[in-house]
Length: 306
Image (cartoon, rainbow, N blue to C red; front, side, top):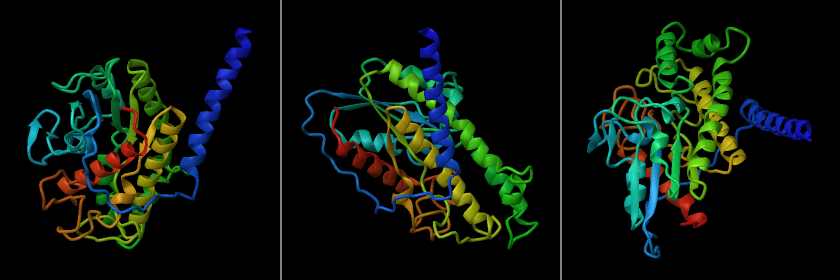
């Protein structure tokens, strides 16, 4: 009987892995293109406080966006968790997101920021999680592709570099990150079995049509669509892992299409490598954080559980 149970569990785990691999490796990537959702207050009907914990990396924490309230983690009081909490009356926010965080920082301290999972308690009502970008080496990818662009401005030197072994190393990194995110979600469910758990995807960094904007964003022409698709694959992995582990998924890519780092300063919600607005390079500015907050609030309105 134990052997049959073990075989069933193994088969279930293999099925999950196959589902993630098939989704990430597939050529057809469907991404919604809904208009940005404005934050709106719908929390007046709540009779008790909502205990909300925000987990994540710099896309959650909002580095350099005024006002910075935690220098160690470069955390802003106008990041999307703060905006979501402000929209919902009675919400008590514990934001432990931290710039540079990977899935490992869910269990270990990062400077003065303790293990992020420590903030999740049995009475937690809502958890948002935005993680995985640093696990695949987001900053290293940007630096590598920017450096290689000078060798072939009209080609795809970055794509060739990451495929030089015969397999796309960025796809493999995304696949290797899937079980790490799975582990985080399982830990969240264990610590807060009654919480609503929401995985937040990453916004649109580069033109969705595959065009480029060298030298403002110093990538080679044909690397723009390659890196765009890498971002979509990361989001697709997060969507699949969320679905397989009892969590919801929030698409922040669709609502930010048309506001990528190639756009004019007045129109962009993601800053380029030399920001014109207070934000980290290749990160959301205040408008980008507001757009992500709107997407999260829209998802929360779809099914009230608290």
